[in-house]
Image 1 (cartoon, helix red, strand yellow):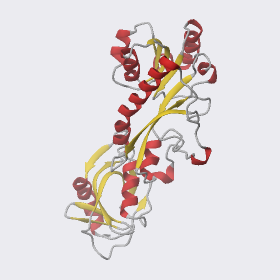
Image 2 (cartoon, helix red, strand yellow):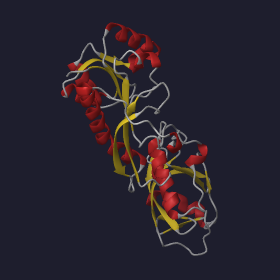
Image 3 (cartoon, helix red, strand yellow):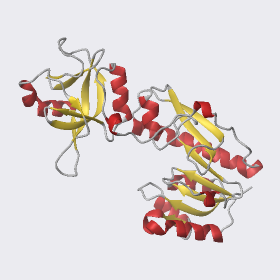
Length: 313
């Protein structure tokens, strides 16, 4: 059975649902650059609704589309705004969306940061019923993925394929036998995943090396772990453990040695591999660990072993 779909999200999801034989009545794409938009517009020249072009008139345009188009299912894949209740009620079967966590764990806009920073061994994706409140609806299908040593960007990319696979599976089943009730989320297992705030952009270097590296990976590649050392503001985006450090260093102290910036932790030390340098302009200068060490070298000669403080700059 072919479903009439109102689609919200990145173009790739719409193209795959079209390839599965579904009738996309209209496709609302978010105001971000994403592959597939040109192809989507070529397939549906009159059915693509671009949020960026409509600006404050988007809701009005979508309301008009729903009024004109009968819809069986609303489907969301990485849409960037809350979908109002009136739109969810326009679809005969309601709405479904893919969330990049194992709901009810890490409800919210940034589950990548929290899965890594909390030290989760695995995360995944959940296709769930869309409700007026974010990420609260019953779950129809999940897929699991080991976090390993991925950073936030790598984890997001690794979850793209399983999220699309699960989404297409649920839509396929809905076309055949309906959505069903799904599995209600256990309120006792809920955790939240808000955007990181000021405190999350720093690290306590009395933490273990493993814990500091998790924070760096959770913040990478943007914005990175904010530090100020010798009045230089920079953001660490990659680092690795090292045993080659001066034994007298205390946690929260640093040294430059052999073109390396070494930061002492609670149980060892890390060596910075790459960092973004804050500049006076809007541009960000990306440096290797050796380049950063060279920049800091002269300033640290007089104060080697002095403590540094974390910050955003």
